[in-house]
Length: 63
Image (cartoon, rainbow, N blue to C red; front, side, top):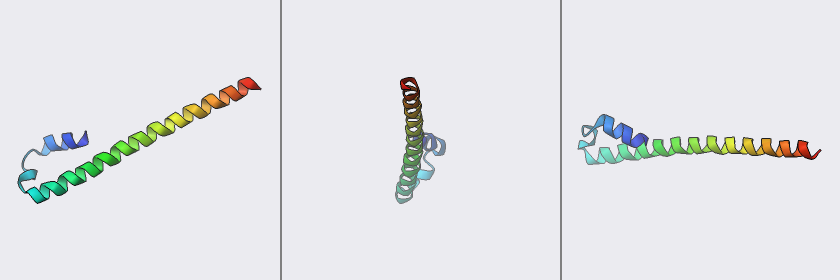
């Protein structure tokens, strides 16, 4: 997702040298994977918070 955005922004100027373009694309993939991983971690933490809230509500109801 970020890769496509940056690719369209820079165009072919960056990718004239094949070795440089491989490094550039590799770095973009690392950045993109990092962003996706952080988003998934936030969603996972939100899911855990929702589960703990529902468990505490169930516990209060049981008492």
